[in-house]
Image (cartoon, rainbow, N blue to C red; front, side, top):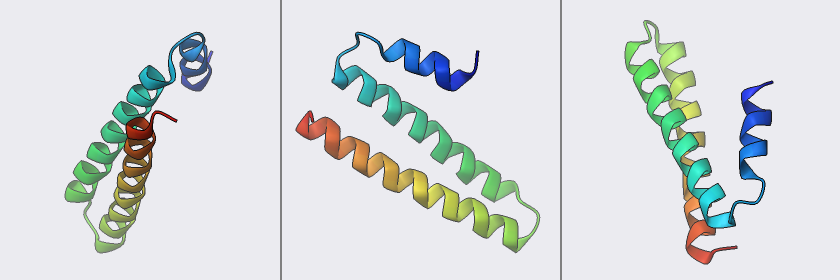
Length: 72
């Protein structure tokens, strides 16, 4: 069983607010990871890739936080 399928099974019967909180936590962890990897990268191309990935995660965090605030 993959992590994705386990995560989907976890969501069954959970309120949307808890699901969004989990998604925010996962995105936050990914953001932190990309920032750390960017700092450790040895070349500028790699640093740029990790910076772009980090910005994407930050954008996802903003969208998820907005949904949580609105309790969509």
